[in-house]
Image (cartoon, rainbow, N blue to C red):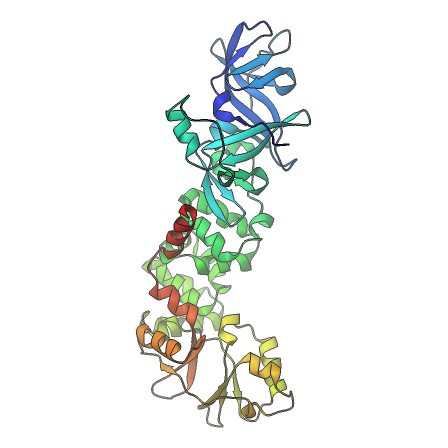
Length: 420
């Protein structure tokens, strides 16, 4: 049987009356306790009586209905309301505020909060993020209280921001955000206010690798916004866990007077890779390539190549091609992990390699790189130094897409999906 929902907006400013209908005061807000149940139970109401805001336990309420709340006790406790840890004031803290919808990783606005009585207990069941609640308040009596199923988000999928309720001592739980892809978390950060974004970054900071992955997915504007608010040591710690090409992009976003100090705090191997990448123009193959890849000699066999993949710390995308070089270090072929898996482990790698049909140089612009990837139907392509003709990096298709797509494309796509 469907639950009968009660809108929080219909309770706020509703009269508080005794059993005989005599007016006592009016409702100011609804209090719930979070963290103890999937759907937070209502613990009481804040009511205004004689100019004072007082707390009324939910157990003393005989009827909680739209535009009318009935007080069941003999007298009102005159103690002033004081928030306790873990309590939320639904109207003050959440109404018209951003909330995180963990299903799909989206920010939503709580245009209405829905309550229901379940097995005798009043609880929050969901949030209405649609436009109808706004219209209903603008045009009272002209719209039904019907809720579109797609607009109602179950509270189990909701996470409020700490900044909305600082005295409630809440924290966004890392374990919930960790279920999202780093790109989804980055989308949340970009769609949020700076303070909300800081809360999300702070939450994922419990996992330093995830924090670095999220920073890699942020656009340059937001990277600069958050890294410039950190100390040099904190910025360097973050960059040390990022892919070198992403760390180079991020250090370029740091205030100019701090760049050298942050760079010097990076571990030596990372520092050298970042320095090398910063020497290339950002809109060239050298500027977007990853310096982490696998190169094997012609004498290696398939088993050697598979072992190299297993032990490599390079990003997965950079391992879509393994490069084969001659005794002088010049590339003679490429091989994919799929070809290696299908081959006899004892076979020489040269028996499964394909010739160097496609390559780019460090000074090729991104349009040239994109055309090569498209013409040869590649997911990755080697980058060669023009003077030495040696492989110095690899560009993956997602590197090119990230640069060529317009700024904020993910948010525009999310907005289109919301309107579909």
